Each structure stands twice: as structure tokens, then as C-alpha cells.
Image 1 (tube, one colour):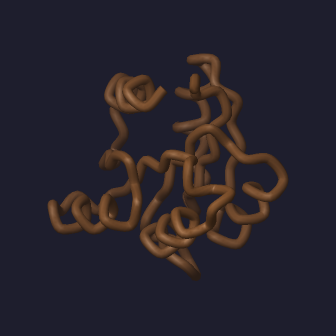
Image 2 (tube, rainbow, N blue to C red):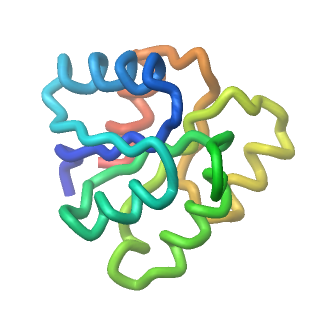
Length: 121
């Protein structure tokens, strides 16, 4: 399945704009959400082909939301890439245990991000 639609879940407008710019310049359709509630609403409206998930957000964090999405049958096939400033190995392992397919740390390198997306597609 080729990845075309990406949902960015991040409470930082700057980070969302940065990622949106990279993705749109490479032909992806992008939607965004600032928190877990908004992300779940976006999923109900239109399921994306990929989710880029921040970890540190108000309310439910990215680890919790990833786990929740992976436990929901209609969404559990959507790959999630954790996209976070949390760069400890324990964070990466925990993110993967919650169901993330990959993990990338901020500041995001555009080529690295695109390679990870291509590897999933």
C-alpha cells in the first residue's frame, strides 16, 4: 500500500508546519491534530495511511494514543512513526512496544523521515 495521506499528531505548531512542508513537497496529503482527542476525531473522519506521533502532548501522551490506536481494530493496520524529542533508547523501545513501526527523534532530518516512510510503503 503506497502511503499518500499522513496525519501529524503534535502540539507544536512549528513542528507541525515543518513536517507538513516536508511531506507536501514530496507529494503527501497532510492533516494534523494537536492532541489525542483531535487525532481520534481525524481518524473517524478519514483514516490516514500513516501517523506521525509526537510523545509529549497535553492530555493523553503519544505512547498512550499509539497503544489505543493499535488496540482499535479499524485503525490497527495504520503504521505509526513516533516523532519526538525523547531520544533515550528506553523511550524508543517503549514506543515500539506500544505498536509504533518506527521511531525518529527531533530535530527531524527530512531525508531520514522520507526513507522511513518509503520503507513502510
